[in-house]
Length: 463
Image 1 (cartoon, rainbow, N blue to C red):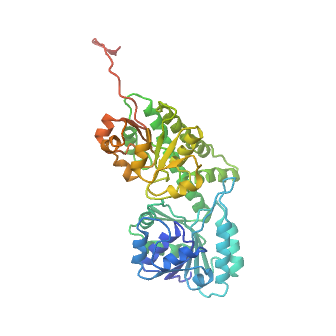
Image 2 (image 1 turned 90 degrees about the vertical axis):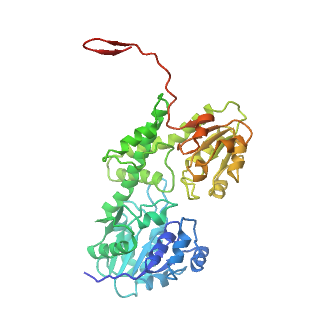
Image 3 (image 1 turned 180 degrees about the horizontal axis):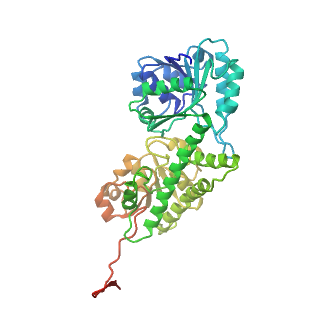
């Protein structure tokens, strides 16, 4: 087994995942060189600034104390490193599979840089790929371009992250699990040593073959989407059942250790850059393995229908064809500007397509939304502007600003409003009691029912 002490790391790809992770590695004491084809990202890193919008990124870069630099030259970064982490996009192909276009380009460039390098080098694929990819095309490309054999002078791992945009740094430093698919025990041990150095907690480290790790990654996210969809189904039942409350029901469900509390909110459908496509990829992987994936397909279809269900609900609260709907939240989750498969964005498009006047607000995602939405959709630069213009308001993303909406803010807008709270996040109890407040997942108040009770020695009947 090779001695493989890691001190210098190259991170290929300085996007929303690569930049924060490069900063975390440098802050933990590693010498890190980031690589990206975008000169603006490279310049930002070298100036000590965050190249992407992510919570605590600039502070983490500052804590690296000069150990983090960046370049557009992949050869120089890899030649000077002991390990290379590849964090480039793997966009979905039309059939649901993840494309290896950018991964293979990075692997080939890495291999060429290693061709004359001596000593052991670890390469880890952190991008999500299909089962069979790491041990197949990726390994072949690395060995061909480097002229070396994986398992000898080269270690190869597949180690995707389980993180969410907006909390990448927190999630990376405090993972529930570290997943490592390894070419050999030396490669796995070398990568595990990096995680043990960087992580603030003591996560479970799961080391396994490439294919098991690849399947585990998409299986985890697909299971979470199933859980979200189940909670949303319970929310839909509660909404139509007098006296029912999804928070009460899912709160009890989450107490069962076989189920757990996470992702049982019961609100809107899931979105973002990972959950939707990982679910579809699992179904495609099942097809390629001549196996069934009816559950994954059903979850995907049900989630796609959530937007129409919400749009129909909104329309039932419009009493005039000229009334305007204010959509509060266009990012797929708080603390990010990412709008991929965002329920707020999809709702806005659905309502506008139905001819409903819409005005939308988001604290961070307006620029991204403007780039993809039709010209007939209005955008509010401030929350107050949206409140003033809308007759029916819908909270689709639970940004902290929206939890602080008060009676006074609505009254100041000049007329009585309806507020549909998809996340039941508004904290003003007075608003809940006095305004037309509709909480998704909460049924109508129970009607008073006259009950005659007849008691005899053997039975209790309720008529």
